[in-house]
Length: 117
Image (cartoon, rainbow, N blue to C red; front, side, top):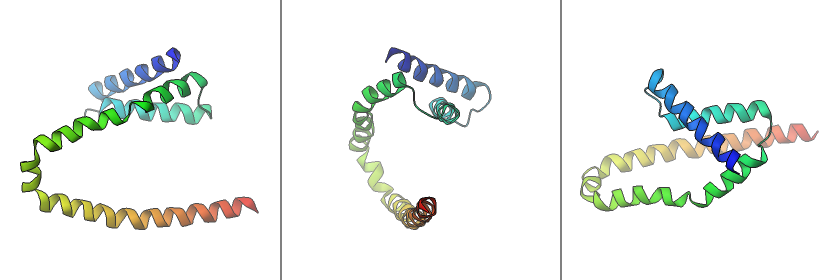
């Protein structure tokens, strides 16, 4: 498990370095996750130490949402002032997401059906 945590921290560090040097518009952790995705795609599977480290970290994922909840609770006046914009953004994302998910489901169902034959 320690090896898996080391890999995750190393990729985040590489992402932060790449962000600071070449891609300041992207956060370092996002670049690190993209590096992890590319590495796992080339490897074809997830190594056991990485699986163990991810399982441990996933248990604590809800704790990351507490920061946002506290921000909403302390800044609710600002949120209420921008309620129209927030509702419009939520409605627009809903109107885009539902058809895209439906199309993706149909595409994948057809693809799986073609693979079964």
